[in-house]
Length: 229
Length: 230
Image (cartoon, rainbow over all chains, first blue to last red; front, side, top):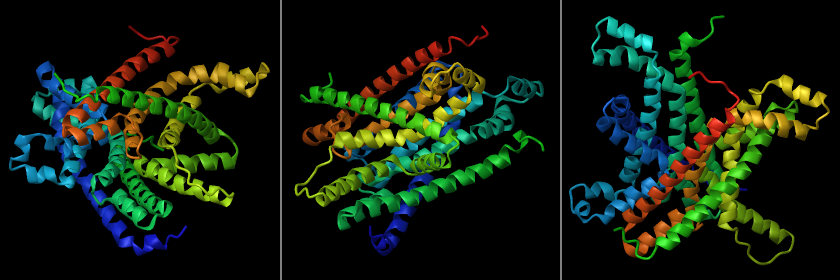
């Protein structure tokens, strides 16, 4: 094995890592913004409210991310109306298609994670909030969300890692992310081991950084759950 | 109605391949998972070390990258080895074998975590009692450990299965004709990619729904001994 290829192309790998981080970060942030209201509405009593959200999460959690990316990137071109609309320059680009698919995917998983956390709020806390005369909105803001988001932290950290790993699919639809770079290097030098092991090491480094950050967050936000020594 | 331009049959046979890949890799991942879980709990430092490295590396790298590494790298390795022993021809790695081995290898690491927790939840005294009765290690595993750990392993196991089922879509990238690949080929020649990928999505939804239903039934079955209020 000859890892000098990797050092010669180190800049390319760094660029790929940056594209990966950018894509994942954007998808996670937008997904989080979408997921919060959806998770709250998902616990609504009216089936007309939670029904559509259930269908949305069912579809995106029940099908492979790869198929979702293909649906957006290859599939949307099937519609004449979309091809002629002002949105087409957007859907023509692999980057935006990947971002859209990733965002919708992570939003669906995050919605279900938050839904579970919200549903597990101790009833006494909500009763106490009601007894204090808080409005529904105030209950959500002051009581339900702060404790639910804390409870969702471990599951959400898993989702972040899954999103990072899922983002490798971007490399399949011509995006030069970490996997894309590895594929380029592999076909240029015919050296699969060096190319993919290097990409794997980058992914591992990012994964363990994420895990570390979430462990710190958990220490901070779960401080009240730690046994007192 | 939905017009599949005569591709309906090949999509169905692709769906069969998807199921085959998923079930075969599930078996491999379960064997690897139990072995790794036992290694993690064993006193041997070497076995413990190997298990830790295996689960850490796998969980740090995307499955797609691992699959490309094993498919392209394995291809090269096999041919170099064959050349060294004097074989002149070119050996093609079968994408089915590569896909099943890779997915089994990846999910073995996830299964290991599930099984480790499940093994720990079985009362150690029962295992000792088994050994005191003169049962062999395998007998203790089969008669005492396995039936009881399954109840605790099922929820995690079910999750892993659902993720594994969806991961099989990646084998289409290394050229195996599963239903995602058939959909790609069909959309190339008919210019109807959305239709075909949507059909594949619906088939996946059917598979996951059946799995969820079956897993719930299994969970009830394996918890038969647990008393529940109301």
